[in-house]
Image 1 (cartoon, rainbow over the protein chains, first blue to last red):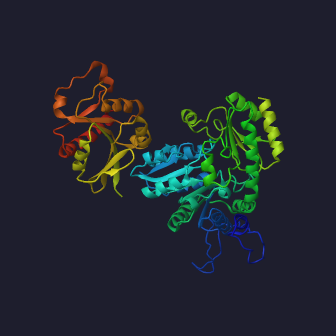
Image 2: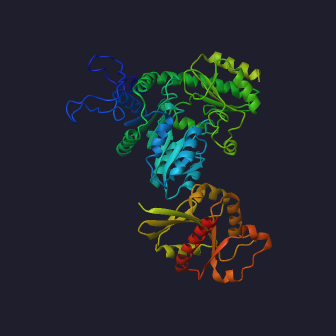
Image 3: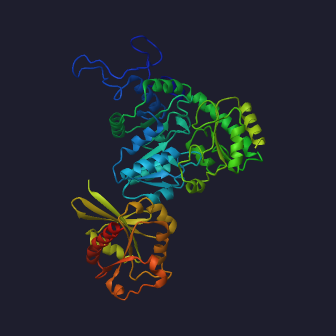
Length: 379
Length: 159
């Protein structure tokens, strides 16, 4: 099936009792059993819920995976991945990773004697250098948030496989519409489904996808044992949203590319980061491993004061954390989403106080460009 | 599952690899990008992983060992000489290490050098803790490494 067909139908069938075309919201915590141990496959909603299962099957199909395991947030999903490891294990993680990922690794899991090396995964040699006998996971974010640096997934999957460690990709920024890491040999894909998968800024969620039976079994165990499951209404909303994922992603990309081109020629913008621009140092890799460039554009305005004035003067773009919704958002990573990353570390990654991240929505392209233009003039 | 102690090792010649293998009772050293890995099965529940750093490239050391060093019980510097301000690779690496990491260091060296040791007045703050080797061999290392770990344990208890 094609991507759009799968996005509308995969994991779903009309409700057998009523014929309802939409998967019902099974808003129940428990299920009546006919006799002790005799039931219809559902005992308790932390363990199984039909709405959740429909969502998991749907996104698994979109990522060209076999299994989906959903969670109450993207960070709950990332935590489940680390909960697969043992005390003493070592994880290599992209150094320019989402601030929340950095925080949970450094301040929560480090206490449980899991070691993390934050490495520039855009250079496979640096990943090789960081491997130790205890390295059990390679955690990659590509493109990174907010610097939009890419890592070569096929090369890194090969390094991980040769070393016998798991490869994981946070695919939140591209969504399965533009990038499918499992097809490139990656073991596990994780999403904050809060972002493009849901796309309407009204749900917090996370999901892990894999093709591997054994990994899926371990993750379902953690999902049930730890219990950070999403509620059925949230699952329904994400399931509804994935039906329009392809349509939204095309529009996000069209607008983002137009804005990136506009910013590239603007005298008040010091630097633009967007993998769809030929000037992006990894444009060739972007074209090779992704089928589009996504809806996030970052730019450096040169100072905190200029960034503040820009953020205060946009009218359509809203100043808010998060990304991937239909509405355009502006974020100041150094103070908002990446405040938990030490300043020295941030600057090393190029994440300056003047950096602004735009999550370009699906409003009219001309309106968005006009809005960005007038905010730059008002700086 | 065995407990594992990971100990990075900086040595001033390739001969040390043979002595660490002899100490660990193994013919094998697994090659990694930045170091060679030798496993010493100390007891039924404990292995020591020695990581013998191949090249004293500061950047590579940071990338390869930054996650390991903070968890290591100590770092071993193995020199066929005492530490000094002289510009030798092991001395330079030792100074680089002190300026970037805090995990305690033990410097292993033949005992005859220690008998002649004079503490330089200007070098006292960076003077390492020495553990003497009766000879340059795996057998001597096998005795010296538990001494090194004990020395660090006592230092930590005192602090």
